[in-house]
Image 1 (tube, rainbow, N blue to C red):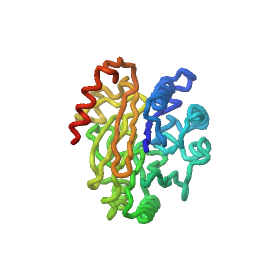
Image 2 (cartoon, rainbow, N blue to C red):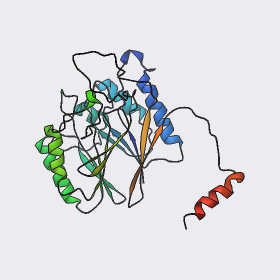
Image 3 (cartoon, one colour):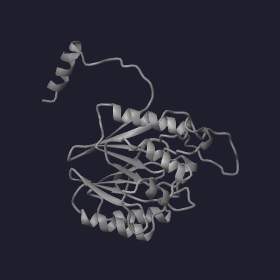
Image 4 (cartoon, one colour):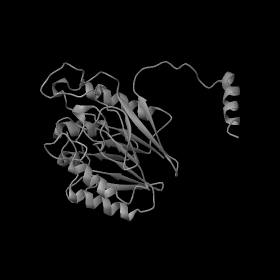
Length: 283
């Protein structure tokens, strides 16, 4: 099973530029790449910040762009979104207790989609109700492999202006829900950071997929909120997406940047000896 993950699309950042808005153009390019490769996904996860302002028009536009996607779509809510408009645009999206969180089971893998929205906050939120919901769902699938998708990463990246404090309540609650389940939660996949990142949380691998919208600059030096030092914050790096491959035992993640490039080698007759040699080495 292949799960494509696109995140931080931010449709509506520049509403006056319709339909040539930069983020729309980047999203269309990424969608085209995802569904034109040999790696056609079985599921498409949209891990939050689908829109920039959470407005109805932006959600309607992104839903229209996704209307011909040939696989199920799993949308998550991000800090730039609103639950009400996401559910209006994706009426089949499950919800529970006022939160956009749900579980999808496919090919022996439980895919848990979480809601980390706190209205009015840039950073994450994960209240006691969400903690208890996640703990109950993990109890239900105990022993089976689980992949969690959520918008906000529960880790410190070192990009100071984007990071939470290490012991924010929402991170503590999320960690409490995972307690006792660390052996079968095999991955935590996030967005929000607008950069690729690999880390661990309670021993569980955490992966952040880079954004569709322009990326955050990689600057790991501390930032002084009272001193504008003219550092780079946002870059024109190309959009990226993740492709998670589940073979029934392991989840492996690939990342691809969406841009023009030249093909330097194709599998023709002249490369058959090399390919055969590489297979022979497998023993």
